[in-house]
Image (cartoon, rainbow, N blue to C red; front, top):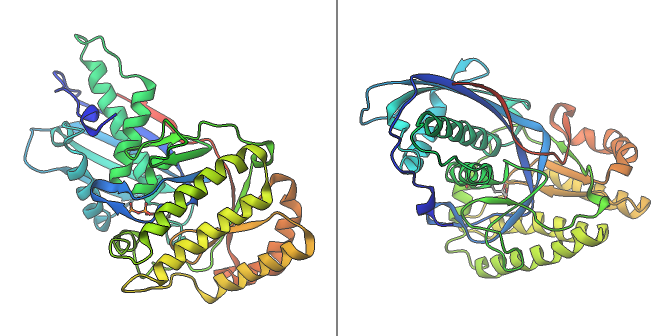
Length: 370
Ligand code: DP6
């Protein structure tokens, strides 16, 4: 597939109005995406667990209007009009217009809600861009269906690939938020179906040990982060360790393929924690340098290491581009790990808050009206 394959022919018919609602999960990367080329092409492959409870639900209602030179849309978060969300969506519309040429033919009302608090430090861009891309794809599909002269129907495979492709143009990691339960994005030579353009479901065997894998997100810092991911990615351009890091991500993904098959949890811990610390090491060694971890992030990491040594638990941590800590552990350790979190870690969470999540199965179409 190339970008050209996602440019549609013109739609000879149009719809007067309609609406679609999709719900998309967040995801947590095991092998991290950090560094990109032009057009949101990643510098290295990444793989993530799709989450189950942290989700964004988005309804896009559309009404036919006279075609004009600008995009017409309004955005609401939990019923409240959000003018400050518009610039990001405007940029997204500009990027995807060539792939969705109907965008200037309609007025859109975008209504979105998150299952997690907006100010939790949990990024909503992955789940949000994924849900929005899916709604736009549903509109495209319904325009195609409205055209009864053409009998070529959009396949489910194409639908999901193009939705992931569009989500990527909104936010890189969003292209891994459509399907469950492990998704790869970025070309890797051991995964033939992998692509830089969209996420694909991890195609190989996964050991029982990873079934219902748990992720408890400790909310260490619920504020806005000082440096956005986009700026962080850009700092990889002249980064002294960039090439070694990109090579390492390829190697770690090769290693993870074996680990996921064999169920070797000690090796899993080593790869996942090393990836998290490498991500933050890249931030600390950029120019300008920055630190997104907080003292409590480090306290939690040290407590996890001590707990593991004492109890032989297979609990481990990963981080995204912020101070919050994702605690990953097998299903059979739920009781012990939650006890550990409540006894020893909750004190490092802002307002004592954390979110229990686990590996999940991807996006869902909630409602359609067209
Ligand atoms: C650290 O996808 O948020 O979470 O493409 O600029 O929107 P943009 O960046 P974004 O970067 C996420 C980086 C990460 C690692 C990961 O999810 O792989």
